[in-house]
Length: 348
Ligand code: SAM
Ligand code: SF4
Image (cartoon, rainbow, N blue to C red):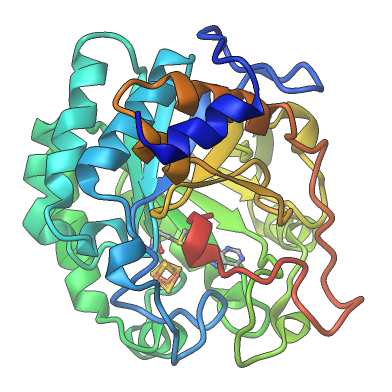
């Protein structure tokens, strides 16, 4: 046991609960989102500034450490795990981690292993992801217009993402498209995006822009409440509430004309915190108990302090005991973002 462990010993008895993680509001934590890198090969305007300063590589947990951390959460009742970023598929050797975590699915400890990706690397990795036990993925795509795609992602190439989608579907992965609804950018295109996605057998989920991290533009200019988007869509489509849930915050409708499902993630207009079942882990081992709050717990120190997981479980217990009731996102009432960190730190 090294000196870090000593610090933890002084903090109290080493009697970690190994049971399920229940927060102070009675919510069971069963969903872990893991940002495996803060880096990305795109620079989406609502997500990042063009010149981002990324974490020094030395601060990152190794993939072996991430695996150990994730496995500790699975032992504590996490049933769904999502890899995200930054762009998860730009992390070197990421398939090692996917394969390791896939074993938990194979052996019944985890219901679902999935990832959120911008799709740029999918043509290379889709088949192997499927082989590792991934069944469903989310691909973020805000427009089908190559020039607009380049504008919103700054560095992205739509044709590469399209190749990636083909590869994913050919590999048997079920794909959901996520699009951030941006006023005067893609709002008029949403019906076409929906017809296209549903035509390919993919669900589409719309997301409201959230005030996270300094970016060049003013988010108030692009913020579009999805209640307004839904009302507009309802003029041309028959939308019926659908009880479908994927374990996330999206609420779905069935679209009669396309036969597909349309989801809405509305952190700004509808607060879904009361049913929050998730926590977020970053690539440095920081645990955020809420996407919309600054409070966080360092799990890297207890992870590295000893080879057994007792200290880690104790730190997890303390962190879950501080999970807040909800976020305080508001767009437009302040000049600064509600939380300073970028979405690429916690991965959405
Ligand atoms: N790079 C991957 C991708 O784009 O899918 C995974 C990470 S990305 C941060 C996860 C999701 O967050 C994407 O669907 C992206 O559109 C969304 N996102 C990023 N910044 C956002 C913001 N400020 N408000 C709402 N959604 C945002
Ligand atoms: Fe990269 Fe995803 Fe952020 Fe776009 S939304 S910059 S793809 S992390």
